[in-house]
Length: 370
Image 1 (cartoon, one colour):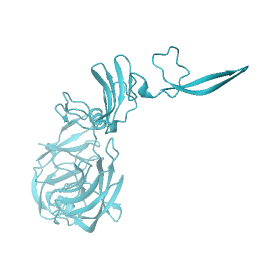
Image 2 (spheres, helix red, strand yellow):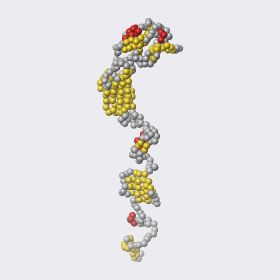
Image 3 (spheres, rainbow, N blue to C red):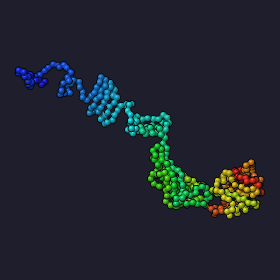
Image 4 (cartoon, one colour):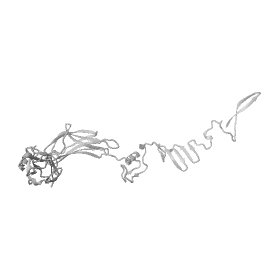
């Protein structure tokens, strides 16, 4: 039903009055003046859809809240759960933590931290995947273990059996892992090889720092009655529960001795020189070459080393010569010797004594394995 107006003309005056009626047929024109036309009155209009000849974009209250259709393909849609589906080929500024694999992926070569054959399940975070491909994980580390007594470092160079030392602190350094920058944690201390029972101390689950002086609870005396090693160890864990370690080993050795005199030296005279502290003591491994500083000439020489060592031959080394000087030494004698410091006693030693004074000018004397 259309609304009509009738025109009443009286003289020079015209007046519009309401009228009613109906019209059937069609209008022609641009329709620019039409108002209040309902959507249902427009043929082919769909308010939930934008469309061209082949492409439509639509919204609904169903599973696909928004959907873009091109021909028989659906290149993009948003479900009612807010999940977007599409190729994503033109997307930028995505956060790696908000993306994941859509299907299982198996590596076919070794790259970074990925080994040939490693698998990544569907749903694996893409950032995790890229980190493993591009970054080789480096564990945190422990180093520089020092055995201390009241804050002072103990001398952990080789020493004689019986020459004990005390400790109450294990001090060590730690470094972070890469690329996460995490320190290790959950550290513990152990020692083995000493006369006392093995010591074990758990420091707790705390995260370590770059410097870690950690008390071991008591003061412990460390010693051995014979040559060998005492090993100190600190363990900790990384974020993947792998154990990392730093160690310190203290070696105990019977020393070797040398003695020089302007008078001939007998075996008994060499034993007295050792036990009275007149002979020079060197705490070093006697299994290889033993070097003896000999900075004067025309002196007799005696050398003693543990019988457990390989038998030695005496050499002299000068700037112009290098030769065996066994001709001026007596046959090797084996005798029991006591430590000048009372650290040990009755240890079998092999003793070299020279028959004559060594006249080479300032030679270096060496005992090498025969």
